[in-house]
Length: 89
Image (cartoon, rainbow, N blue to C red):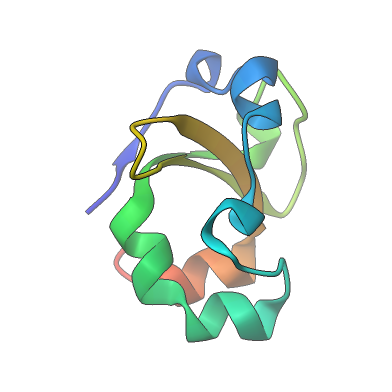
């Protein structure tokens, strides 16, 4: 299970450091739904989008990821995309 992170962890530098394309994924609901296992494997934390200090977004969750190269980045998932990947939250 991923943990809820403080909004301060979601910096502009980490937002610019990657995207779902880092994992070869498109930012489309169908692609996210089909690859939710990969997304879950790499996700390390989340924060509700409206609480962010950098790039706040309503109806979204910010999700922090790690890569195989030990790099981190974060991106937004819509609430429905987040729910399909993380039903337990």
